[in-house]
Length: 136
Image: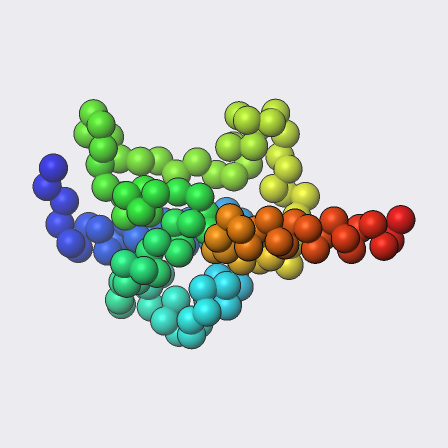
């Protein structure tokens, strides 16, 4: 497979923008979640620079996609990945649009939780359960 660095840079920029807009997030929401400067993130979407490999990994983890998908690299059969919107994903899996019920703050919390280790995710879940118990 031959794909140029320029094409990968273009794919990353477009996919970052598409994913962010699909989740109704601002560039600031995503940059805060990643712990980077908003200008750095803006440069990625505007094709002025590209994320580091570690940043690509974190972004892929947040959106639950592969780095290959984020980069738009062709796989199996030569077709490019088409990123499925979360609404379409939820329709296919659950038959409804669950992600659209979340406000921007809830989406940002979910993005941050996705960056945690499984053990830390469990701890967050336990904290949430404890908070909910006190409200009952």
